[in-house]
Every structure is written in structure tokens, then in C-alpha cells.
Amino acid sequence: MIDTLKKIFGLGPKTDYSQLLQQGAVIVDVRTKGEYNGGHIKGSKNIPLNSLGQNLKKIGSKNKPVITCCASGMRSASAKNTLEMAGFTEVHNGGGWRNLQNKIG
Image (tube, rainbow, N blue to C red; front, top):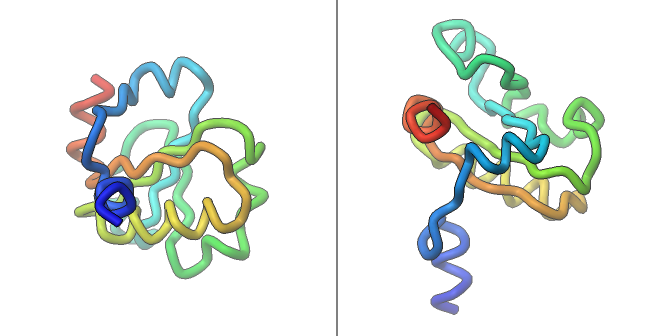
């Protein structure tokens, strides 16, 4: 139970997001189009959370790393769960996009 909660909230071992990007990770920003247009990580894909399930093909291979992000980390946590349930094998909740941007330099 505790391990599950740690996984959901991204606690535990730190994720090296720069290394994931070097391995071909895709950043999926699940904010609305308007939020995304107000600022985003260069190269990220904007797929709003409410349409994520219908746009899985836009992400690409289910075997490549995927990093989800949003404004604070709540929607990206939901997106991570959605992607894992859809068969994506390596999904990481990057949290808020600005914080993630700082982590990837």
C-alpha cells in the first residue's frame, strides 16, 4: 500500500528526466490548449487530459519513456495512470511543467 502511494505521488528514487529525454522520451503536456499556448516545454506534445484516451497514437510507441506534465502535477498524475492502463510501459509524472523544465535544464 505504501509503495503504491509512493509510486502515485512520485516519491522514492529520483527520476533523471534529462537521461529519459536522451533515451527518446516524449513529454506529454496535458493542460488545455490555452494553458499550453501561455508557455510550455519546447518539443512537448500538448494533449489535454480530457482527450488523452482518444489521442494515444500521437504519443507513439508504448515502449518508449513518456513524461507527463501539467500545471501542478495533479492532471499529469491522472494522465500517467491513463497511459499505464493503456499499456504504456514506462510513464513518469513530471509534475508541473515549469518545475520539469528546470529539471531538464
